Amino acid sequence: MARSYALDTQAAKEANTGGKRITETGKYLGTIAAAFYEQNQNGTEIVNIMFISDSGQECGPLPLYTHNGRGEVIAGYKTLNALMTCAKVKKLSWQNQSLDLYDYDEQKVVSKQKECCVELAGKKIGLVLQQEEYRKGNGDIGERMVLAAPFEHGTERMAAEILGGQNQAAALGSYIAYIAKNPVRKLRDGGQPANQSYNQVPQSQQGAHGPDNFDDDIPFAPLHHLVGA
Image (tube, rainbow, N blue to C red; front, top):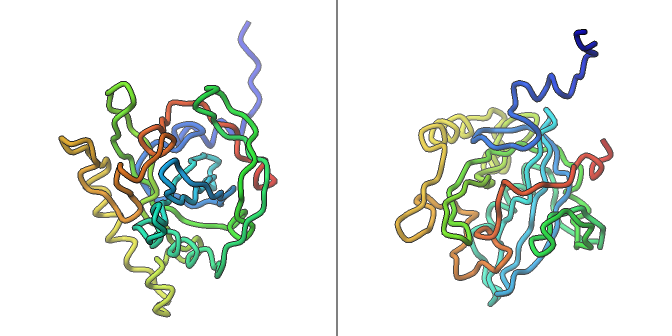
Protein backbone atom coordinates (compact mmCIF):
# COMPACT_ATOMS: atom_id res chain seq x y z
CA MET A 1 0.00 0.00 0.00
CA ALA A 2 1.30 3.44 -0.90
CA ARG A 3 2.45 5.69 1.93
CA SER A 4 0.13 8.47 3.04
CA TYR A 5 1.97 11.80 2.65
CA ALA A 6 1.27 14.99 4.57
CA LEU A 7 2.82 18.30 3.59
CA ASP A 8 6.17 18.85 5.32
CA THR A 9 6.84 22.55 4.74
CA GLN A 10 10.40 22.39 6.09
CA ALA A 11 11.28 19.59 3.66
CA ALA A 12 9.72 21.67 0.87
CA LYS A 13 11.98 24.60 1.73
CA GLU A 14 15.06 22.40 1.81
CA ALA A 15 14.31 20.86 -1.61
CA ASN A 16 15.80 23.90 -3.32
CA THR A 17 18.37 24.82 -0.70
CA GLY A 18 20.48 21.67 -0.35
CA GLY A 19 19.57 20.63 3.18
CA LYS A 20 20.05 22.11 6.64
CA ARG A 21 23.68 23.19 6.25
CA ILE A 22 24.80 25.98 3.95
CA THR A 23 27.38 24.42 1.64
CA GLU A 24 27.31 26.62 -1.48
CA THR A 25 28.92 29.98 -2.20
CA GLY A 26 26.41 32.81 -2.44
CA LYS A 27 24.57 35.57 -0.63
CA TYR A 28 22.19 34.66 2.19
CA LEU A 29 19.63 36.60 4.19
CA GLY A 30 19.04 35.49 7.74
CA THR A 31 19.59 36.00 11.45
CA ILE A 32 22.59 35.90 13.74
CA ALA A 33 21.63 33.04 16.06
CA ALA A 34 24.55 33.72 18.39
CA ALA A 35 27.99 35.28 18.46
CA PHE A 36 30.63 34.16 20.93
CA TYR A 37 34.16 35.20 21.87
CA GLU A 38 37.15 32.94 22.42
CA GLN A 39 40.93 32.84 22.18
CA ASN A 40 42.98 30.09 20.59
CA GLN A 41 46.15 28.58 22.05
CA ASN A 42 48.26 31.37 20.52
CA GLY A 43 46.17 34.11 22.13
CA THR A 44 44.46 35.11 18.89
CA GLU A 45 41.06 36.64 19.66
CA ILE A 46 38.07 35.34 17.72
CA VAL A 47 34.42 36.34 17.38
CA ASN A 48 32.44 33.36 16.05
CA ILE A 49 29.16 33.91 14.21
CA MET A 50 26.33 31.35 14.23
CA PHE A 51 23.94 32.05 11.33
CA ILE A 52 20.49 30.84 10.27
CA SER A 53 19.22 31.80 6.82
CA ASP A 54 15.64 32.91 6.23
CA SER A 55 15.07 29.57 4.48
CA GLY A 56 16.14 27.69 7.62
CA GLN A 57 19.69 26.68 6.64
CA GLU A 58 22.48 26.96 9.18
CA CYS A 59 26.14 27.89 9.11
CA GLY A 60 28.75 28.36 11.79
CA PRO A 61 30.78 28.90 13.72
CA LEU A 62 32.11 31.45 11.20
CA PRO A 63 35.31 32.76 12.84
CA LEU A 64 36.43 36.38 12.59
CA TYR A 65 40.01 36.81 13.85
CA THR A 66 40.25 40.32 15.31
CA HIS A 67 43.52 40.56 17.31
CA ASN A 68 46.67 38.49 17.45
CA GLY A 69 48.36 37.25 20.62
CA ARG A 70 50.21 40.57 20.98
CA GLY A 71 46.92 42.48 20.96
CA GLU A 72 47.47 43.88 17.48
CA VAL A 73 44.50 44.38 15.17
CA ILE A 74 44.35 41.84 12.34
CA ALA A 75 42.19 41.58 9.25
CA GLY A 76 39.00 40.07 10.71
CA TYR A 77 38.56 43.20 12.84
CA LYS A 78 37.40 45.01 9.71
CA THR A 79 34.87 42.29 8.93
CA LEU A 80 33.48 42.43 12.46
CA ASN A 81 33.04 46.21 12.26
CA ALA A 82 31.36 45.87 8.87
CA LEU A 83 29.04 43.27 10.40
CA MET A 84 28.23 45.61 13.29
CA THR A 85 27.46 48.41 10.84
CA CYS A 86 25.13 46.23 8.77
CA ALA A 87 23.40 44.95 11.92
CA LYS A 88 23.09 48.50 13.35
CA VAL A 89 25.09 47.66 16.48
CA LYS A 90 27.45 50.26 17.98
CA LYS A 91 29.10 48.20 20.71
CA LEU A 92 29.46 44.61 21.85
CA SER A 93 29.04 43.36 25.40
CA TRP A 94 29.30 39.79 26.61
CA GLN A 95 27.47 37.43 28.94
CA ASN A 96 28.25 33.83 29.81
CA GLN A 97 25.67 31.58 28.17
CA SER A 98 25.32 27.90 27.36
CA LEU A 99 25.60 26.97 23.66
CA ASP A 100 25.37 23.58 21.98
CA LEU A 101 28.59 23.24 19.98
CA TYR A 102 30.61 20.45 18.43
CA ASP A 103 33.53 19.30 20.59
CA TYR A 104 36.53 18.01 18.63
CA ASP A 105 37.90 16.01 21.56
CA GLU A 106 34.62 14.28 22.41
CA GLN A 107 33.55 14.18 18.73
CA LYS A 108 29.97 15.09 19.50
CA VAL A 109 27.76 18.09 20.20
CA VAL A 110 27.98 19.22 23.82
CA SER A 111 26.74 22.16 25.86
CA LYS A 112 29.51 24.70 26.46
CA GLN A 113 29.70 27.93 28.43
CA LYS A 114 30.76 30.78 26.14
CA GLU A 115 31.05 34.54 26.34
CA CYS A 116 28.15 35.46 24.05
CA CYS A 117 27.45 38.84 22.50
CA VAL A 118 24.19 40.33 23.76
CA GLU A 119 23.74 42.89 20.99
CA LEU A 120 24.28 40.67 17.93
CA ALA A 121 22.01 37.78 18.92
CA GLY A 122 18.79 37.80 16.91
CA LYS A 123 19.90 40.55 14.52
CA LYS A 124 18.84 40.31 10.88
CA ILE A 125 21.82 40.30 8.52
CA GLY A 126 22.90 39.44 5.02
CA LEU A 127 26.07 37.42 4.53
CA VAL A 128 28.14 36.54 1.50
CA LEU A 129 29.45 33.06 2.27
CA GLN A 130 32.16 31.38 0.24
CA GLN A 131 33.55 27.88 0.02
CA GLU A 132 37.23 27.56 0.88
CA GLU A 133 39.63 24.67 0.59
CA TYR A 134 41.66 23.75 3.66
CA ARG A 135 44.13 21.10 4.68
CA LYS A 136 42.75 18.58 7.16
CA GLY A 137 44.85 17.10 9.93
CA ASN A 138 45.29 13.88 7.93
CA GLY A 139 46.59 15.80 4.91
CA ASP A 140 43.41 15.56 2.85
CA ILE A 141 41.82 18.68 1.35
CA GLY A 142 38.36 19.58 2.61
CA GLU A 143 35.97 22.46 1.99
CA ARG A 144 34.37 24.78 4.51
CA MET A 145 32.28 27.95 4.46
CA VAL A 146 33.81 31.30 5.40
CA LEU A 147 32.24 34.72 5.89
CA ALA A 148 33.38 36.77 2.92
CA ALA A 149 31.35 39.94 3.56
CA PRO A 150 28.24 41.19 5.40
CA PHE A 151 25.48 43.43 4.04
CA GLU A 152 22.29 45.01 5.39
CA HIS A 153 19.31 42.65 5.42
CA GLY A 154 16.64 45.02 4.15
CA THR A 155 18.58 47.14 1.66
CA GLU A 156 21.56 44.97 0.61
CA ARG A 157 23.82 47.96 1.28
CA MET A 158 27.35 47.13 2.34
CA ALA A 159 29.03 48.85 5.29
CA ALA A 160 30.79 51.60 3.30
CA GLU A 161 27.51 52.51 1.61
CA ILE A 162 25.67 52.70 4.94
CA LEU A 163 28.37 54.87 6.50
CA GLY A 164 28.52 57.01 3.37
CA GLY A 165 24.80 57.73 3.53
CA GLN A 166 24.04 56.05 0.21
CA ASN A 167 20.42 55.03 -0.22
CA GLN A 168 20.92 52.56 -3.07
CA ALA A 169 22.96 49.36 -2.93
CA ALA A 170 25.54 49.05 -5.68
CA ALA A 171 28.68 47.40 -4.28
CA LEU A 172 27.12 44.02 -3.48
CA GLY A 173 26.31 43.25 -7.11
CA SER A 174 29.93 43.74 -8.15
CA TYR A 175 31.13 41.68 -5.21
CA ILE A 176 28.78 38.81 -6.04
CA ALA A 177 29.90 38.91 -9.68
CA TYR A 178 33.49 38.49 -8.53
CA ILE A 179 32.56 35.69 -6.13
CA ALA A 180 30.65 33.91 -8.92
CA LYS A 181 33.88 33.72 -10.91
CA ASN A 182 35.76 32.44 -7.87
CA PRO A 183 33.24 30.30 -5.98
CA VAL A 184 35.90 28.27 -4.15
CA ARG A 185 39.09 29.69 -2.68
CA LYS A 186 41.75 27.24 -3.75
CA LEU A 187 44.74 26.27 -1.67
CA ARG A 188 48.14 27.43 -2.77
CA ASP A 189 50.89 24.85 -2.91
CA GLY A 190 51.94 26.00 0.55
CA GLY A 191 48.57 25.11 2.01
CA GLN A 192 47.10 28.60 2.32
CA PRO A 193 43.95 29.73 0.45
CA ALA A 194 44.98 31.37 -2.82
CA ASN A 195 42.78 34.44 -2.43
CA GLN A 196 42.52 35.15 1.28
CA SER A 197 39.94 37.78 2.19
CA TYR A 198 40.35 40.28 4.98
CA ASN A 199 38.80 37.99 7.59
CA GLN A 200 41.54 35.37 7.26
CA VAL A 201 44.49 35.01 9.61
CA PRO A 202 47.90 33.40 9.01
CA GLN A 203 48.25 29.80 10.11
CA SER A 204 50.86 30.89 12.64
CA GLN A 205 48.04 32.69 14.49
CA GLN A 206 45.60 29.77 14.32
CA GLY A 207 45.29 27.39 17.25
CA ALA A 208 44.35 23.75 17.40
CA HIS A 209 40.69 24.71 17.13
CA GLY A 210 41.15 27.31 14.39
CA PRO A 211 40.13 26.91 10.74
CA ASP A 212 42.51 24.05 9.99
CA ASN A 213 40.69 21.96 12.59
CA PHE A 214 37.25 22.85 11.24
CA ASP A 215 35.37 20.30 9.16
CA ASP A 216 31.94 20.94 7.65
CA ASP A 217 31.31 17.19 7.67
CA ILE A 218 30.92 17.09 11.45
CA PRO A 219 27.42 17.09 12.97
CA PHE A 220 26.14 20.37 14.38
CA ALA A 221 23.52 21.07 16.99
CA PRO A 222 20.31 22.70 15.74
CA LEU A 223 20.57 26.47 16.02
CA HIS A 224 16.87 27.34 16.00
CA HIS A 225 16.50 27.37 19.79
CA LEU A 226 19.15 30.08 19.99
CA VAL A 227 16.87 32.62 18.33
CA GLY A 228 13.62 31.41 19.79
CA ALA A 229 12.36 29.75 16.62
